[in-house]
Length: 330
Ligand code: SF4
Image (tube, rainbow, N blue to C red; front, side, top):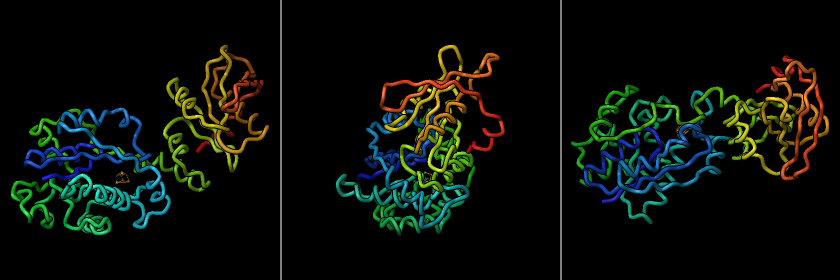
C-alpha cells in the first residue's frame, strides 16, 4: 500500500508520515514550495531530514504562480493576517491528488491536528478542504484520526484505525513525545513557517498588492532589508547587513538600480526597482547616504549602476532628514 504524505517542513507532517510508515505503508513524501517560507526555514535542510526519517527522497513541487493567485483573491478569505489557509490547503491537496494515480498512491496523509489552527484546522474547515480538493474520504490525518470520521484507508483496512492517534488543540507536548518515540530529530520550533501569518511581513505584502506589484521576484525582495516607497511605481530596499547587501545584488534584475557608497564610507547596498527618473536616482542616492557612516562629513559620494549595464555613475549628496525616511518607510 502506498500513500503520498504532504510535508510542510514543520514537525507535525514529519510525525504523520513516519507514524504511518511504521504501520507498513510505503510513503512518498511531497513538499510544495511556496514563495512565503521564512528564509531561516529555507536553510533548514528538509530533504536531508526526510531521508533520515523515511529513507526516501523528498519530492518537491513549486507552487509559486498558483499560490500568488490565491493570495490575491482567496475564495475562503484570510486568517488573522493575509493567510489564505483554507484555499492554500485545497490547492496543495488538489495538486497532490493529481499525482496519486501516476505514483500509484491510494491516499494522502497530512500532519493536520484538529483544533490546532483557528482558521483551517477545525472540523468544518477540514471537511471543506477535503471536499473542494476532490479527495473526500482519501485524506488521512493520523495525528487526530480517532477524533475524525473514518476515512477510506481505515474502512478498507489499509491502515488500522485503532492504532491511529487522537491529538487535538494547540499543545505541543504529545507531538514532542511522539517525536522522541519515532526518533525524529532536528525539527524547527512550532509554528511560524509561513510569512503570511507574520504581521510585519503582511504589512509590506499588502502595500505591494495595493500597488499592483505582486510577483515572485517582488515577494523575494520583501523578505530582506528596509523598504521605502519612493513613488507610486518605485521602491528602494536598503540592506541591513553584509549578507543582505549581497542578497540584494543577487536579486537585482534587468532595469533595477544598485546604489552603494564609495570605499571610504561604511554603508549599505540599496536596490531600486520600478519606474526611475533622474529625480528618483537623486532621491535614492540621498536615501542610501542616510544609512552611511559619514565620519562627520556633510555629504556622501554614492555610486550607482543600472542592471545589467556595467557603467557606474556617482552622485555627491546630502542625507535625507529623518522625517522623510519615516514617512516613506513601509
Ligand atoms: S500558514 Fe501559510 S502555508 Fe500554512 S496553510 Fe496557511 S497559507 Fe498555507
